[in-house]
Image (tube, rainbow, N blue to C red):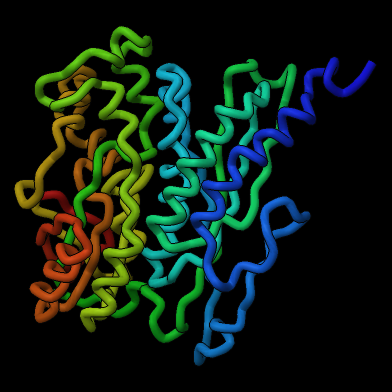
Length: 341
């Protein structure tokens, strides 16, 4: 009896590490010390020491049941982008710069080529956000998970000057809401998605005219990473007063999280493009407007609150970073919360 006969293939683990090394190397920053394979990831804080009052920020998340669609389509090279995006966007939302990322993959059986494809996506997400992939873990769980199944999660650590943290505390009546477009469903609400659409290869590979692609391609579109857009806004001299990353809970849960007491966010529903996938999802599932906006981003991945005098600069900075921006509403005195109008 040995470990392999019990369901854990150590040699496959070694091969996975070798296959992923090239992808990991592409994410390196000067602060990274050592290479892949140590017991911990080392990251120099020499540059952080030069900051006046540095604050560490962290974020952790996974991709939810979106991984099920990746498994059904046997396409694993983009799901890692989602895992990174869900974490680094939260750090950027607070005004921070993501420094490094670590991933965790739990699988029923370690197929080295599949694991390498997953990590390839993680590395791509790290490259898009400018953070280093300094470590991770692949855990083989025979008997706990089916052989072809896996789950993916991770966490990031970032840094910001304390004086530059985005807290929302200074949002006032008259401030303007600016939204940054999403790329699709991102990584939330997939349990409902999987109830609405048939989850088989035939259905997922069907070309949908309104989407301009297959259903599966649309659903697997990676979550937008907003780190560069947020940096562009900062570099333009704009002080972002509040920022909401529109994830699980949609508009109703996430927008109020950036608001101080006594401020209501009025979002104009005709001010931005609702993406075709959400229209198809709502129609196919006979889902109410309230439930859609309480579950999905509907086309806005980030919502920012800025001074009315900074609106034009904010929009131009977002567009300069290659993203689409909308002026979507304003902040008004009233009960803390969000009003869709």
